[in-house]
Image (cartoon, rainbow, N blue to C red; front, side):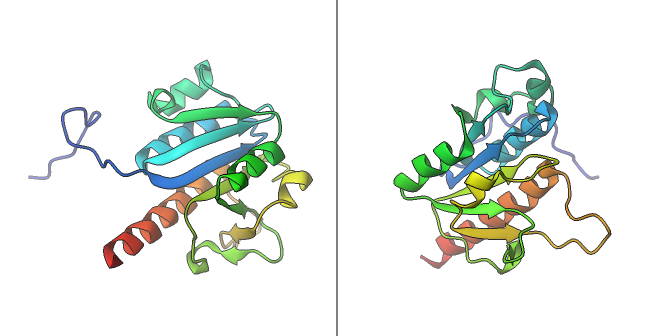
Length: 175
């Protein structure tokens, strides 16, 4: 018999160590995408989300619907611009990775991620703003072999966040 875990793990001991990753959301249009990213950040024990520009912030009904309570568990800070968020986290010692389809981007699985880091994710139609692009330390991308240049921002966040988790766990095991 296969037993499927359901519900939240309220009675189990959780991972205590945070993954030293912040997600900077640059002008995301969809509160549903933002809620999805809250769930992802909570699932990997990420540090925080920086919601920039008109990106939805808690409390927000549509965000809460897809966040399923993780909007109450993940720290969220609002910045007027992504550039402000990037400069703030850089001053705290974070390496800034733009997750974008720029020409000099490195495949997410080929990047040696340096922690602590911030992942900048851009608007669903426009990508990362020009002022934020110019402040990124390095660019990471996902391969796209089809006709479309990119995938949904929430799906992209999942791939890159879990790669961060994989690399951070591997580095922790070496020590």
